[in-house]
Image (cartoon, rainbow, N blue to C red; front, side, top):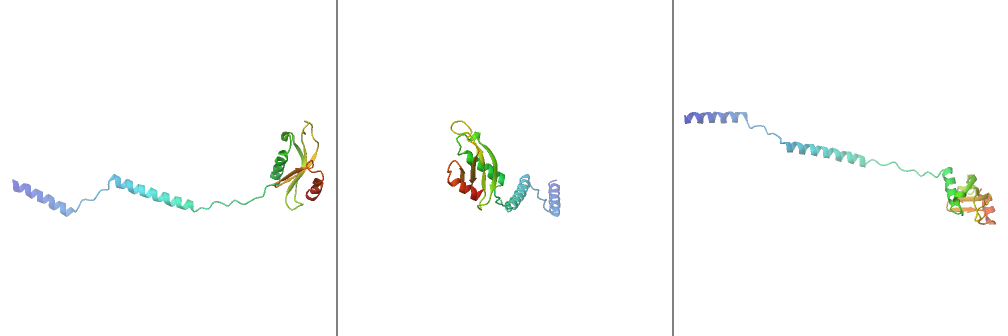
Length: 146
């Protein structure tokens, strides 16, 4: 009976050899590693494409006349004793001198608590002045710029 068992074992081995080696199965770890590799690769490509996009350039736009007037009012208010009392009228942007300046009138409370009366002002760039500051030079500057 020993011979019969050996013969059966030999037949099994011969059948295994004829079929060839068993196909290799991928483990779950190998599939996960491949998926991770693909996801990381796609992310690298997307990030690379996004990094080559150039942002739109900001084009300098000079301030609008409305913005100039608001800035001029703020500059004049900074010179007043009671800035919250300031009332402006007749503001206009003048370009007679080459650079835009705001000319207009302001009325605000004086040191005695009364309104000072309608006073001319000029403001533009780093300059802000009222006619009360220099009664001799102001009219000349007003005539040339406003």
